[in-house]
Image 1: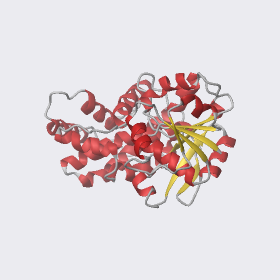
Image 2 (image 1 turned 90 degrees about the vertical axis):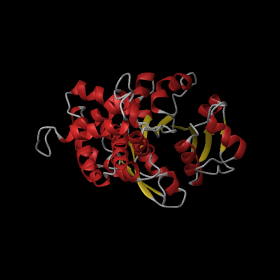
Image 3 (image 1 turned 45 degrees about the vertical axis):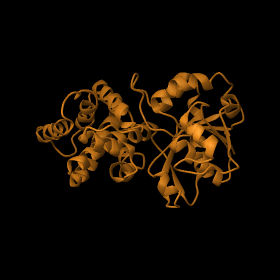
Image 4 (image 1 turned 60 degrees about the vertical axis):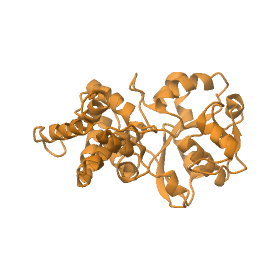
Length: 327
């Protein structure tokens, strides 16, 4: 299969590496002035992977789009709508799109597949690839399970059957709303996990896993999805990699937040918290954990960081008692 992976950062470079090593003809695209692209161009590798010589690295977007049967996108979620304007300058009527990214558009509250539909791509041409696993583990040969979901059952089956291997076991997703929302929301819970680590409250992360999944389940249900999706691979199944792993960007962001230090890499949970807060208000869903992350990331400027985190936790514990599985 001819595949072009657009975006050659952390996940983009891994996906190109993975797909090439499992029998596909792969182009890896990045902007010419992008740091990630420059590193790969100059050295043939980055801190995660060494590009296989069979992979064509290019900064020519037209070439990458036009030669592909499947276009995989792996960029920052908030830049997707603008990026699609560039892609749709070319004829993509016969292309399938796979989103290997997790987030919700802050300005609109749209899921990322919805951003593509709103940009003019047919829903039947769109799939998402999400789930647990870290590049550092995959490149050591440590296997994991992931999920591919789509509104198009035939596309979903084709991708799962073509992309699966002894390194990644794929499952067929059954709820696009829940799969996308759950995948994005786990990054918000990752920030809270990092805060727990920073405060020395590691044992609290078990409760965070339970309450976080329940919170996300309520929102998925209100938005028309299957609340059980919150307990699947896209969300709860990704908690080890997000709430516990030293490789987790969002967990790292939260841990440094307690210390008042800046995290140098992308933490998608920050804009996702803002987007989810809006969705909670729109659908009338109680999202105490999400709202706590939003307040810390957007409303606590000028306050001592550790104190702000401790106050946030105390406020959560002071909430009125509720039934464990309240709706």
